[in-house]
Length: 170
Image 1 (tube, rainbow, N blue to C red):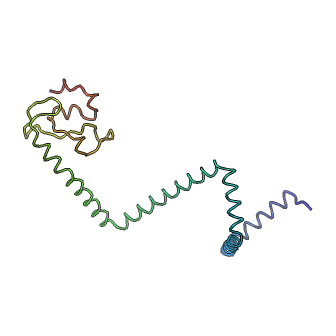
Image 2 (image 1 turned 180 degrees about the vertical axis):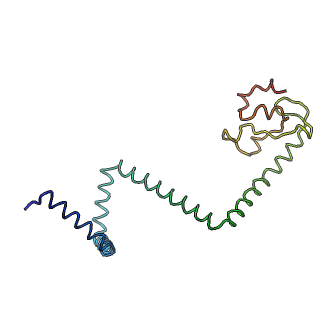
Image 3 (image 1 turned 180 degrees about the horizontal axis):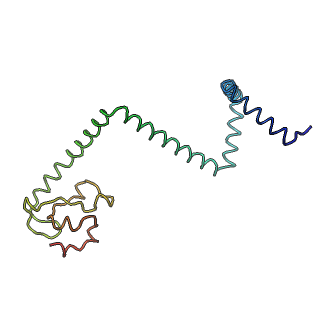
């Protein structure tokens, strides 16, 4: 005997209500069923994954996004609950970065001429420039830092050196 669409809807509503009322019982039944039929479950799962690679890819992507969101929320909550540790971490990170740069900066301060226009550098006009600006993906590494005069540094600003017309600066 086939069920009518109305009977199917009523049965589906009944089962939804049953699952909500007996959530733990339903979960336990699912666990026992999985343990008893682990091999069959694995085969069915593999068959479905092979037949639906796009859905698997989408599911994995959504799972990654949910995990990223959870990690971000956890990190924010931890930072809010541990402000003293956050401050200590930030200070330590900045100190390490500053320490790493000090030897490079000292070398650059020994330079006597501007890297770009070759004018004489004094204490008043000496600056340190990033060849590839930080905002354009450059780093605080020794290869990306040069000693230059203030005019060149300020006129170059956020430009890459081949975009900048250095003749107009000095």
